[in-house]
Image 1 (cartoon, one colour):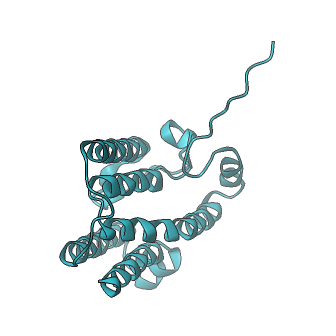
Image 2 (spheres, rainbow, N blue to C red):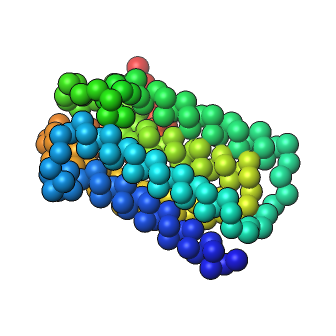
Length: 194
């Protein structure tokens, strides 16, 4: 059982690593196809690997971490719903069809409005909330393993993503990074003085 979960953990880390590596300019230019075709291929590979990892998690034997309850189910569903809401709000600044590779993306420039005005990586935030919600809703060791792999990956994923964004947007992104938190909005509790 533990070996199965270790394989699942390493598999998720490999999935995240491959996902990030395929997003690099080095890999894109080495493959030598149009940006739109590459985006379609990237999404196809990511989708197949993602569902493969979900299937692996579903077929291995797992144990309950705690007995599910109405409270844990409700908490899990609420966290996942909030995560999906954050992801949906993040896509307001982008064309979903262009993101998926079905349309050429003509919008250039750093997006810093909407949810991106509060957090720099809303897709990571939303994904994290969905996975934490899943742990509450389905409190099995496999769910916790998936969360652990995500938590290990996130600091690296954020750093790689930001290196790419600094290369694309330069000082504009550095200023944005210095003023907007990465994953969760800051709670500015300072009161305005009169």
